[in-house]
Length: 458
Image 1 (cartoon, one colour):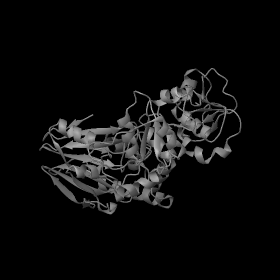
Image 2: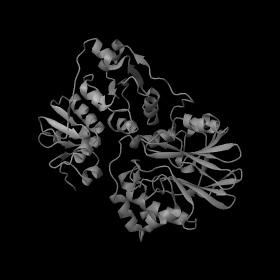
Image 3: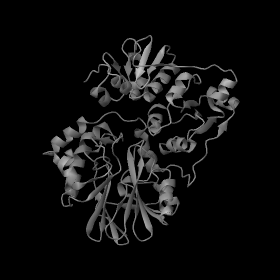
Image 4: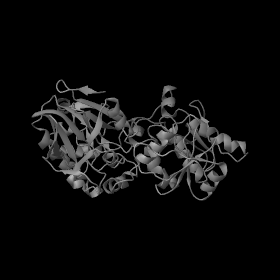
């Protein structure tokens, strides 16, 4: 979706990251220049949009130190953009530091920094003004449709303190702004950074004043209770990326590196030397046959989240991929969460492995009409489980599996998730630990419920 101003020809173009549930924005300022808000690491989408419009990227702005992706501010700065970021972020790179109330002139427009600590201590939202008239609010994680970004990503001891700061700062800064002001958040539905988000990607301040707990709860205490009660688990890599973004990640430029092809011999040497083997093929293909020891993480928008949650960042990575899968997407998703040691993929994939007659492993797929055995294992998130699950099932979130396998009973086990991808990831992790007699419910909970089987709630 794009929104074009009634005056001045200003255009705001969102760039959606489906996997992380985030949006960044390319703002064409109407004078040949563009501003990018909260860019992700790969600069290509922003540069491509600007070039399509016959423009160049002149400015990049960060709302906060991101925990869920590596910022692309330094990448755009390397292409000639001026980088703006919170003074309190203390970036170890060249940037123009902004504090609450600071303004930057962007032709006829002004960008005003609004101190909105809460999601993070250094957080700034940015009010874009057409001369003196509020035109757009880039809210980062301070205000999102139906909620706010979570406040527990820094330290558990600061969670409530930051929630209270969020309430006070947003109430203070937004009180005088008009109802028709369009709000452009960075975090949104599907983001592990979000709490209580609805499905919208943008909103208006008037709508949020009617429905958002941040603006509708009667007092600070009620808001804090509402926000904190909606927090679930989040990927473990969130705990390291703030520091990466502060220190500055490697700059790759406009072209990301290719994924090298590995001969079978080199591939096997790498695996023997300790490289982690990730199989990115669709889960039914992995189920039918895979290299022993491989971890199944299907290449889809959510690939980066599960890679970062489950796989150590300091291990070299090797891959088995399908012939039609997008190698550039794989590299981009790995790099945006800081996985730099991409050794390469098996040249020829599983066909090459099979052609040498090497041992293969398989995991059975079960259908909703099959006997799933005793106590199938649900690996979905807590919220999904609460909304409905198979009667008699056990529950253990996929992100907790590595540290909690001791609670699982011995013997045959069927796993399920929403469709099958996460359950196959879980099964592959268990298989790599030596578990036998594993199966995955094909189609997951969705297929089970659509078949008319009973569902337990709560």
